Image (cartoon, rainbow, N blue to C red):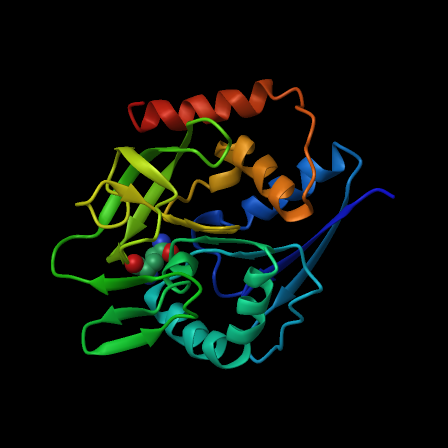
Length: 240
Ligand code: GLN
């Protein structure tokens, strides 16, 4: 039977800054072009989650204001289901504001916003300007080392616990905190990154890898001439 990728977008109405919804469109297209099924559900404020009903959970970036509303709700209504999903190796991709909420907490001045604690990390809004600009990293998520290119814009600085692995090593840009050379996080099939772009249109190899991780299958390559051009343009913007 043809597999179907069942995607759940978390808070698609609130966490979608920088056209991060384009990531979903790429996943849909990559599946359709290969004859795979694709199903999309959304889950927002107050909605319970069925941890076994999805192969991939996706969450985009957001403004601090939206993140505050989302964080409380996510900790209250979705934390347990997300942990159960991660324990079952369900794929989870979170971008920027979504990524920050994968950790223990996001400290914003006097206020500490809860995360769901899927990975050991903390984010702190430190004094200093926002970390903004084109960014490129090298990641081994695709087997060998491959480049992920995108655009970052975050006030929060993220610090991984010892023992957690970043998604990649910064080649150009700021990454998690502008200091330690790491960008994003990866634990099993849980992936967080600061890279917008949107991320997946600029890095279709990563979209394919996510589909593979989510469905436990291997994909045949597609004719990606245009997608490769988009990837190289994002790399050039980052000077890589
Ligand atoms: N509000 C968060 C920050 O500024 C995340 C921003 C984003 O998602 N681009 O750090």
